[in-house]
Image (cartoon, rainbow, N blue to C red; front, side, top):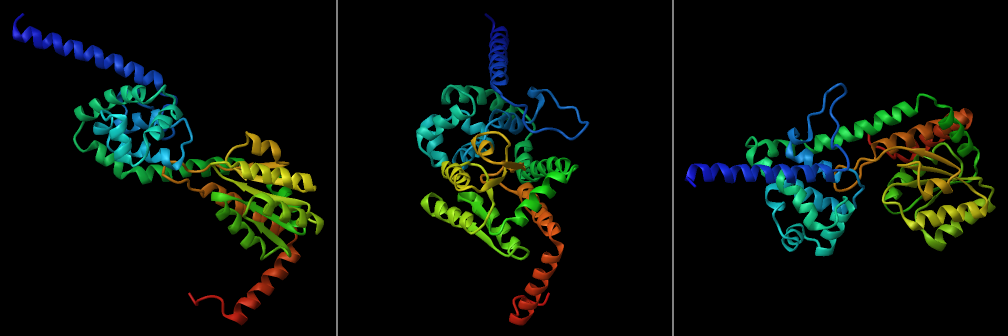
Length: 330
């Protein structure tokens, strides 16, 4: 066969193989990846930027921080990572080989070889694409994280169309004396914020930030002191000790209001009332813009439930702050 015809035949075979790989990769994708702007028509998967196509493979599942490191390494080093052995990829990321295998399973593949097979045609398209496009996409990763949080805030805003539910929960929490705030592991930061602010407008706020028997003792004491409600914060990853603490609270006779990211699952089933706000998951660790706003809204509802008490306590706090010189003069 003449050399020209042989080259064309090889090119045709390669094109068919790549098309087959692309079809398998697209069939393996669980979600369509990052949404476009409102009213903007989404390009076909094969035309989307390579980094977006990779994120489409990973975006349907909640990943642990360790798994996000693997996903981010693959996204940032796609043209290299798609052809690495499991040993080499684990070494580059700094994780174990079983961690890579579990990551592949978590994003919907039978194992690492199947994941790599899906990544390779995307990597080849990146090599053939516009030089510098991947670097531009990487520079905008933080902007993509902000966009995801804006979506969470817009969803929360829609849920505030009817404020009756938040106001009613705020009234119930304001009446509970003492009021217990429960937050464990990563959720401690939100619980501490809420408890710190609530103490300005509520006479007896008790923060529980340790699980096990310590949590049970605190919850029992709160109930025996006359408390009727506990406000629990449960951000992903959801822990077994939080579920145990919520069950313990209900056994003591306390009612449970839960702020979390989803209205489904064992935690929501254990709560008397559930308020949801999405968390940002585009970075290695979650971000909590929407849960923070929801917390502030619930504090506002508590303040509005007893305006006279709120005003009196805030005035006393300001007097103490001035007397003891708590703050800088801005």
